[in-house]
Length: 209
Image (tube, rainbow, N blue to C red; front, top):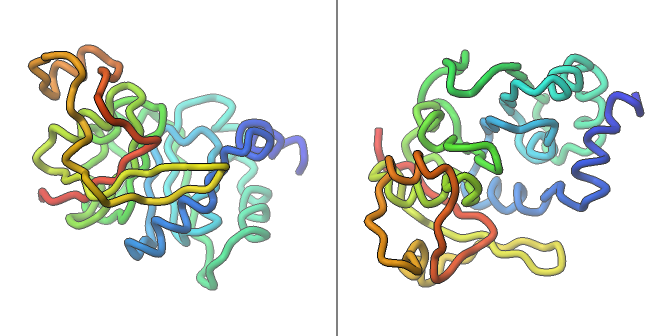
């Protein structure tokens, strides 16, 4: 089992990048039971906290990792904090292609370092559901311009601990330069622009259908 799961240890445990406390915060605050994580690689930490998880990645190493599902499930079982049964599905594909998930059924959509997930996968997120997103590939900036999303919190970290700040949210996503920003512009740019105030990640609520 160690050889198959070493990828998780290498990229998340050893680098102190699991973010268990962040997923605990999100799950408690927003009553999250179902998460969709496109571009997840092997970051299965959400399954320690959230009973039902969908992971999506076309990466060959990720496919190999999730192929050992029994061992992955054993690792999750040792770390899970809920009494419900573990539900895990992995889709070894590009997230731009249709995913075999019911639209409007997911409580949390995760976008971390994997492109414009907010646009490609928001249809799977239920109304009132939440998007956890950083500004890699400009996805947080894209969500900020999308009328289907409303910024409800920013994620800040200190000494490896995370918190969600809901204060002065109107101070975020103000460009440093005089730019005529649009979703299309940021999609074409493929990277974030400079803002006067930033955070590690951002939490949006889906207000559109």
